Length: 490
Image 1 (cartoon, helix red, strand yellow):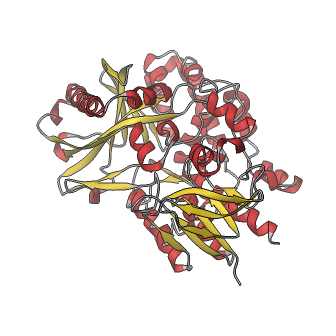
Image 2 (cartoon, helix red, strand yellow):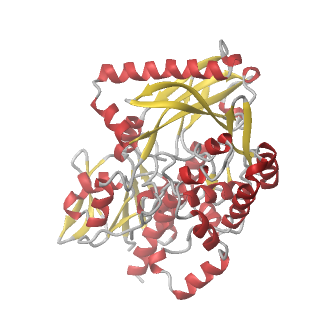
């Protein structure tokens, strides 16, 4: 008789755990509180357009890489999966001049040096270290804590140049990186894409992922990728129950034995994998008494381990009224958003996905980065005040877009807007965060084993097991949860 695994949460981590559990010969049931699975890897339709919530790029698209094999195993990527034709990481507008980090590193180096010859040495050093960082790959075959000396030797040999990246950029944040350059446009460029508190080496790895072809965008976006994973799970015999929230994980004699659903029904199992937000797991599903000092110190110290989310708005625009591609950052007239001053915006064009909008139109999406304090501001508002502040921010965003891109006026329509509270409501995300803890300079990067001390047969498959989270951590953590189970069952 097959042993049974229950997985709480049908996001990417939960679907991954379900697929790997099915492949390993277990009976698998995935329980998801929302009408559809996918968690934050989601998209939705408004006014004939499609809004993509998640994928800016998918790490692990390079064929032959360990992570690509994981994406193929879970069905997220297939042999014939097409990728969007994008040659830009992002662009910064400074005094009407556009400065771009291109996928082509030679092109980027030439343009940056042409802009600021006095920064030539620093520019060349940056580009060279981005090339070094292209070797970086996260472990995807088995958990790091299960790796032996041979595994580490093999990993070290495959990433021989990463120590150079860490030595040069692993002890500074993005703000310090920016001030290595003299030209003000370059200073702004390097503080745009990620919060300035991020350790600089993380930024180099992100850019290297794009430049090396290991960070492409699958056609169809987030929802299409999620649906492929759902199909894969069901084809293997795994069961997915949507609209079925779990109220708690059942623990008897210090062992997870199943779950209790919101309607009171109990479902028993041999193992339970928690693939929800980990604060949701500790606070509601099992109780905070199981939260160890490491987890608690990170949640309680937002200065050392900050989280970020965003206020976002999506618009349908006439293609003839907007010519930029990819993500564009620009300074704007200061305004107040969730109690904080903002003087910069980003707008992303989804022109690479014609299917997301009717012919002649494209979807534009604006994101204002929000931190813990911003979440708390939204949280304390009344229902009416919350709605009003959203409307005010949308009007301000429209005005700032028209100021920067005058041709958009009269050719743009609001599709939808959402806040950190949207992520909290839909995904139970702690403080509305859509990724895990930010890795700051001088702070040890967060990583934990996917188990809970004091509870047997309970495993964690979640992006929260390792900073900075995101899709690669989610899909591998789901796999690793099953790895531990199969190891226990020999």
